[in-house]
Image (cartoon, rainbow, N blue to C red; front, top):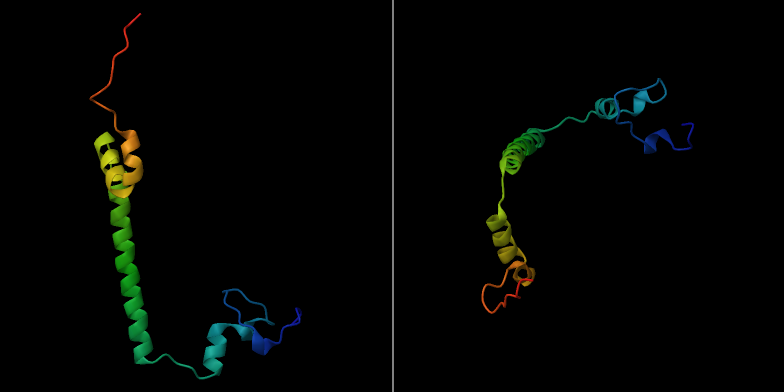
Length: 104
């Protein structure tokens, strides 16, 4: 190759090729080596595709819920209380023991 890497040490993944790089494609190398995927390989691939589809569907549903959420102050305070308890106290307003200063 022009870049100093032997053809046996490189693989081309992209779709477009030149006459020089065409023999380096995964598809061409797989055919020339006589490699075929087994039934177990295809089962694993199908399982991974099904998992991908399920995760994608769950993500889309979660995003729809996220976009439609309208959190109010109470929701924010509950989140702080349970997720950041050490900081939540700083956001509460004291209701007892406060003195009112005389108005001028």
